[in-house]
Amino acid sequence: MDAHLIEFLSLLLRWLHLIAGIAWIGSSFYFIWLDNSLEPPPEGSDAKKKGVSGELWAVHGGGFYNPQKYAVAPASLPERLHWFKWEAYTTWLSGTALLVVVYWLRAQTMMIDGGVAVLTPWQAIGIGAASMAGSWLIYDALCRSPVGKREGALGVVVFGLLTLLAWGLHQWLGGRAAFMHVGTAMGTIMVANVFFVIIPGQKKMVEAMRAGGLPDPIHGIRGKQRSVHNNYFTLPVLFIMISNHYASTYGHPHAWAILVLMMAAGVSIRHFFNRRHKGVLAWQWPVLGAVLLGAVAWWTAPRAIALPPVEGVVNFERVRGIIGERCLNCHAPAPTFPGLAAPPAGVLLHDAASILKNAQRIHQQAVVSRMMPLGNLTQMTDQERAVIAAWIAAGAAAQ
Image (cartoon, rainbow, N blue to C red; front, side, top):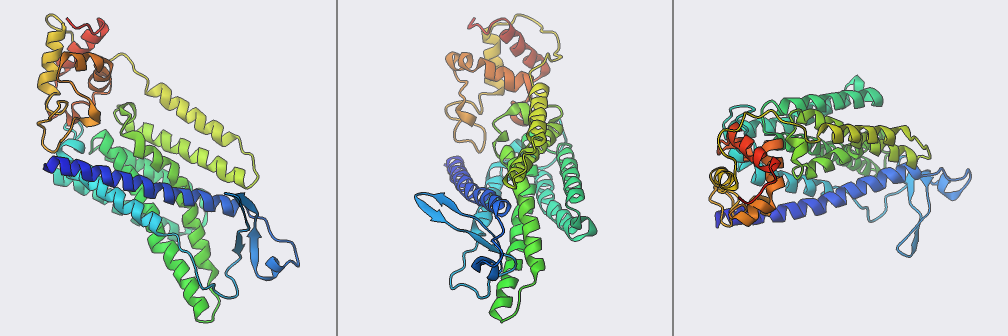
């Protein structure tokens, strides 16, 4: 029952995380598009006299809209002012809770890979938590330093540090956990930007107006900078959110480099859209993104794997015996592995029909990517992987 409750809690958290993430990233896309699409009002117009720096007309859902942005602030505050913050907070809180339930509570299985580093669960969790907090502290210090005044240089340095983080985590954690903690580090930076910079700055501007003074424009400048940074983080974070379904990425021998290439592709594609919204058709950026994605597709393609020579006869019963010993504790109708209420990804390997049905999947996960068994907790040997490979090469027959 405990395993079922944990799994159901994971389902609910994942659902909430997805919904909140859509709302947060959708608002990020919308407001960056809005900022980049605003046009200055005509000289002498009412909007110009009110201090409006840009506006546009739009039609949606059967109605016309006329959003306006003030250079600093309106002459007086409206009675009702909308804030955009709970989308960010809910996304991070639900995502962190999901991280705890799926990874931290199952650190031995989901985070530790004995072939990478010998850790205790608490050491693995500590590394993950430190990566989240440390990433924000370093990033924030950079933004407040002289480097933060040069957006191009800041972007290169931050990307370089994320590359170092990806490499470092892959020296300690299993591939899937390393990927996820790079994502949570970026997510923590994003929500901390909202909580520590954007919202406090907006509150100070509102307080200044309510006190009868003029808001300090620096708060708007800083908020805009951090909002733009969050916008560039979105596509890499979204990739990481779905990456656990694709072992060819996190299971690659150079998974950290695969992750860096995918992040670079996401940033390039996002930059194209941001430039396009400003009226600049910079085709070099999507071309760069396509080249990077093509490089990943080529690099992650299956290749011949050096396996030991197979000893003895290779037949289905031998393969079935290996799967029964190494895989069935998880991939049975009622898993015996602690913490599992159902077979991962719904993959059953309890009978001949199920094994034959999933033959290519077994080959990909156990032989090509070597990601299964998770952390190799059941100690599948290279000789056993070679037997599976030979059986697949011979046609994966049920005999």
